[in-house]
Image (cartoon, rainbow, N blue to C red; front, side, top):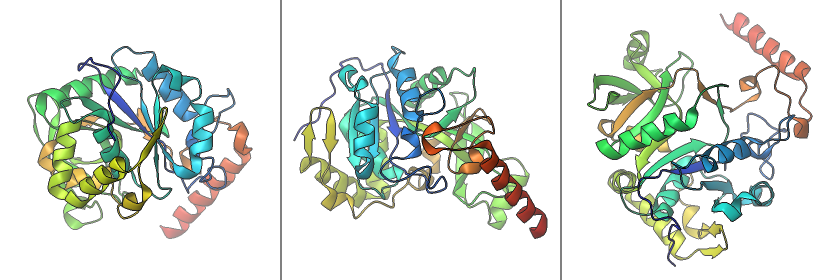
Length: 316
C-alpha cells in the first residue's frame, strides 16, 4: 500500500496535530470517545478545529495530518468533515498510543524526504495575539537547514517529572543546542534547573521526516519497523488512514521526548516561554474558559484550585 502527498511543493511544512490523547486529567470532561481536543468552547470552536483553521489559512503549510484514537474516530470525522475536502487526513491509532508512535507514522505518510514537519499537540493553547504559525514555519525552516529537531521549550520547574533538556552553546541558526537530557528530580537536573539551563518541552517539535526516521531507526529500530509494517498492512478509506493495530499495539508507550532525549545533540531549543501550553488537566484551564459540551463551570475550577492550594500549604 502506497501513501503519497497530493502536494508537490517541497517548501511547505506539514503540520501533524496529535489529538489522540483523551487527557485523563480532564475526566469526565474528556473521555476516550470524545476527548478534550474535540470539545467545543463557548464559541463552538474545538482545539483541533482552531489549529486546523490556522494551518489551512496559511499558504506556507500543507493540509494537516490529524492523529486520532480509534475510540474517538466518530468525533474526529464529525469535526473534520468540511476540512477533509481541503486535504486534511486522519490517521487512526490505538487508544493508548503515545505521541512517538503518531510521529513515526506521520513521518512515513508525509514522505521520506527533506520535508519539514511540525508535531503539534491537539490540546495546545496559544496566547492570544501570538502569531504561532509564523513561529512554527520559522522552526521548520531552521530544522530543514540544520538537519536537527527544533523543540519549543520553556524553563523547567521544580515540579517537572518528565525528561528535560539542558541548553549548551548557541547554534548557527540562533537557537541553543541541547547538550544532554536529564530528569529534573535528579541531583544534576536540580542543579541545572537552579542555573536556569534546564528546559521542558512546551509542546511543538519540528524536524524533517527523513531525519526523524533516521533517529528512530537508531534508537528504536523495532518501533520504526512496526510502524512501517502497520502501514503496509493497513487500509485507507478516502482521507482516513488506519494502520494495522496488530503491530502498533506492541509500541504504544513510545514518546517523542524519549526518542529525542536519546540523541540530544540533534535537538535545538526554541524558547517559547509561557506563550504556549498544553492542556493536560482542569488546572491548566483559565478561569474564564467555559466548555459548554462538558458542562464546565467556573465554580468547579475554583474548588479544584483551592484544594490544590490547601494541599500545597499542608505539604510545605
